[in-house]
Amino acid sequence: MSNVVVNDDDEVELFLRDFLFEKPTINSPNLKLIDSLISWGRDPSMECFKRRILIFFLVVAVINGEPIVPALCFFGDSVLDAGNNNHVATFLRADFLPYGRDFVDHKPTGRFCNGKLAADYTSEYLGFDTYPPAYLSRPENQTLLLTGANFASAGSGYYEGTALIYQAISLRRQLSYYKDWQKRVVGMIGREKANEIFSTGIHILSAGSSDFLQNYYVNPFLNRIYSASQFSDILMTSYITFVEGLYDVGVRRFGVITLPPIGCLPAAITFFNLGSNNCMQQLNDDALTFNKKLNDTSQNLVVRFPDLKIVVFGIYDTLLTMINTPGARGFCESRKGCCGTGTLETSILCNEISVGTCPNATGYVFWDGFHPSDTANQLLAQSLLRQGIPLIS
Image (cartoon, rainbow, N blue to C red):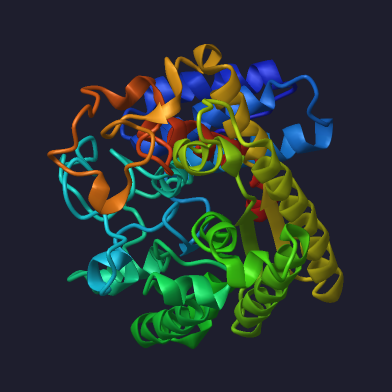
């Protein structure tokens, strides 16, 4: 093996791109990873130290051709649900067309999207050649579980009552399934190797939107008793309990996704801002309040558990930019979704006979009334990748 000495970032980029031309067998997920990280690494605002860490992982990704982390596990709601609700008695499902029409095999999988979720793109960028399977799908090839699993469930949230209303899988139950997954991994490869996967694998949670949009704002038993800020405090208690539960079973690398600008989701505009096509600012303000509490709570958890790495993935600004300036990111529509009228439809209301569904969702920020399109998810995943470097360093 030849020794390679690289003196600056421009030489690193040239070296890597030349190396890629000489190594056509490198898989496409790693190519996507490299392109994304190079773009980030050339950002002049990045600290020199971070740039050097970036260079290290670029070289590792290219030479090894293996995932950068041993496993990926996802928890939360419909933003990450890869099909668990297909196996639950709930009406919040997406296992029918037009959901999945732009996915790998053009078939519905239970993902609330026309194609891939941000979780799928994240998996690709980190070098995985398969997506973490929905845990309740019980994949025939059990070895797939060695690289992680997806426990998310549409309609779930931090608040236990939210999952109860929609008969979704609560975070408490998702944690229980995760412990079951750990037992299965231990059974396949033994305790020592399994513990390494649990501690160095990345675990990502996305929740909260259902708690507000599908519970708090429409539930007088909550919104007449608690302010939105007080309700956020209740959700933080659940968040702490969930992270503690993961920590107790060996998890040491954890990411949590903030709320998006929920007042700009097409269905939220339809429900709460009648007669207007503008974002509902109060809802967005509530999301910002929640996100600040999420950041503060996460910092406190790191103080309590110094060996726990937590990254708070901020997607609020990323999605808001797509919504406010769609043309800058190649979109043509950001106020309504592609499915049906685009103002309300989701789940069973977004179906093959929904009138008005667009023929090409590429130019839409939203696929349905609540969820980003495949194209938007790809951009969100790139943002997650940039923010998540501390979890892989």
